[in-house]
Image (cartoon, rainbow, N blue to C red; front, side, top):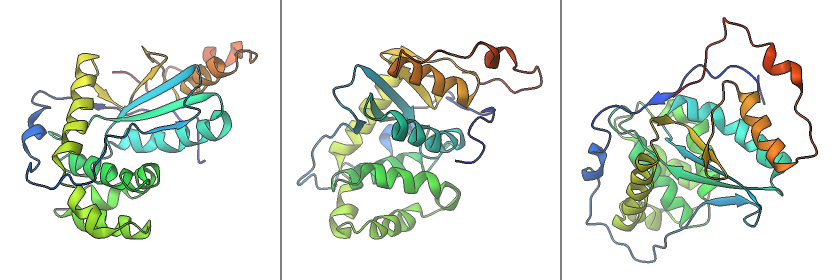
Length: 226
């Protein structure tokens, strides 16, 4: 993982009118075979529960993806991680369709594989006028049933799931992405390292936080804030 402890320096902020996207998805798509799936990985029975509200088109969210991936690789047996959607469609016009594509992939058991592809290729599809073409390409790379994938990308059931998570985030006073909750409490941190340490010390109380690192932050470092 490249430069894992770099100051974050960017967070996508919710603007007024952030719920406009709710009316932009077709309700005519078939819902055949669609199930509501909570995207949890790691140890679902773990006492440490980390939830991320995220936007696939958000640059800060993409920057966090490898950090969370490494955290789960190291502590996945002690942490339950859940990804939830918070697409800021008023500033990220392709975020909702990306969320729908990920949900469609999830119907075929490939949510996190697709999630990783979306973040890895964010610059490719985020500026596209026709992102669906790229979303289908990623589905093909994962060996998904493309006919089913295309249909379920327009599912009103999946749209309602994404909308429900977005609305849930708003009730929790989320004002930007990514936003993380650790055991139900909204996390506050300034660096990747601070974020990782908060989670890993919760996952393994035997670890002792170093006293010096937090004290060595320089005034020139860009603060992470919401």
